Length: 291
Image 1: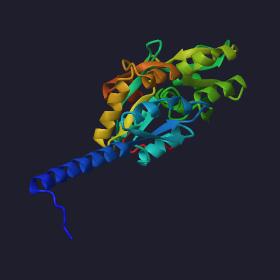
Image 2: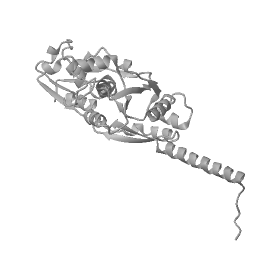
Image 3: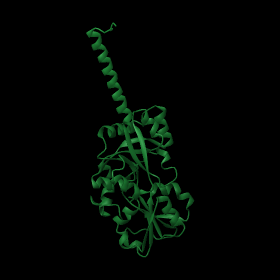
Image 4: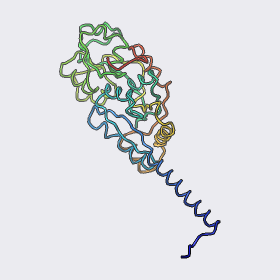
């Protein structure tokens, strides 16, 4: 039986084609295999859902996003510290704690439609209550409610020494639930995020601001674990930074549905006030989120 063999030159060409095809296959598999696990808070309805537009946008860029839900700040902090995710969209309290502990670095944060990217703590009390004096003695004999591990909640309260003077401290699952508890008379004072209060104050006309933190904290920052593949992390953050100017339908959906202009770079320097506040509250590298 005759065997039809290609000439040596032809065999070399065929081998080259096969190698190229194999290499392309490997590259395609690598691109398809790029995945980033991100913790998101589920402390209020719709919080997790708002990040969904990111999935098709990054799918087209070769990155699959796997969202990991956390029921509150404390759960999110512990999950991240235990390396159960690559990154997290986080409040500044948890983000700052991870920076202090040396396990993560900040990358980007959203820029709101109004141009805002920071927030601060406000102290709420029933209308007619005395104005906050700036001293921890203000909380003497009072029951105070706040969101645990929040820069605009527990961390701010502890940074000014309120935990040494208050009669009782109550932890709320979210800033919104703290406001609601205060309105129902379950506490005398609530410390919450100003942007949450602005969105809810129309429903709570019997409450008012009696004090304000004078410093600002980065809002909704994406922090990345130092163990995350730097190539994937860089590709992901570069994609987020391009959301602002990307004309694609996927990028437009992110801007519209998340109500943002896009994302901006965020560094440790942007956390100056937050880190100072956290350190005064007692956060250090050994902090175990067990307040």
